[in-house]
Length: 465
Image (cartoon, rainbow, N blue to C red; front, side, top):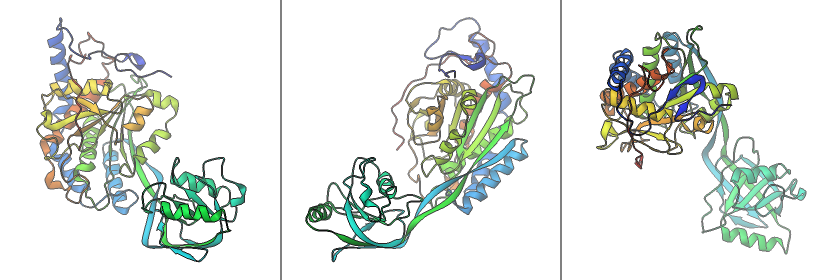
């Protein structure tokens, strides 16, 4: 499996080498002019009104993952890709959501009543049985004697879900977990399929039960109502455009955004703006000659923990992951109130490890050539869908205006906060970068007529919030 590197020869001979300042040698000016000429094939066709209208349409209602609002957005995105002639598919995947509907919990141990906290996602049920102390319920330490009984567990070392699963695997019928610090009992998380009630108590209450259980048998009743985990479906939308068979170099370049929003948030900037740029670049590039597969993806359930992009990445074979030479992620690229007073409207490129790669190289060079006329900086940040691709060894970066706007993740993330100029600049930079890879006269060797212009771009430790 080849490793995609920032400098030097990539798969099929794709070469870029312009970290730092490069000497101005013969042909530098003509290279820049040549790049601009090729950029214009993309840039002149990008229409910020199209993107603004897409944001307006998608932000008419929240698009929380697993809801009807997401499905409405997904079907619209799919229809647009298909209209542009792309091979398009919906990729469904399950997500699990805790339900707390008038939740209540009851715990009684040897006649003593407690006021327990019900684990988020706990199964609703009533059970009665002997209490068995299993310490932290670490793997390999849970005794067989817990079968048919209620497990008393100390918090710590491993996740709540793992603790529940370890006792459930041994046949436990319920969980009482006590805190390992402080005086709170408000903690705990169960997951789909863990069909036993689970409640939490304070550290002092738990230690008192541990002391009692050494002297006398304990019997408990746990009752949980109004809680549980439901399975829902979210979607990725995948659009592919194969190059001409006679020119196909086997490489893939990806452009992504996430289409879901937070609960009750219209998500105009987060991330209908990114989706609008993805769709506009798909439109512009639909009939462009390429020797590289163009793959546009909008991910679901990003707001639930990057679930869509991780699911998509998990479906890639080693061979297919190796063929992906770059992933460009656009998240929140349209807010007029983001970016503070930073150059390029605050647009920055974040990588997972804070290091330059092919995507940031191309983005920095494109920023100097396109409407922004600014060389972008780069920084270090996860929290978006570039992460699973980085973990596969694929050069990936997040394009975002940073710091974020005051109404991030709120119902005020609406269309009136969107700046067409910011949409235009972000799409131009990413579009010019992508086409530098995909156009058929690449691999672009360092001294070739179509080589990217040399630029110096710097690391910036810029907080996103």
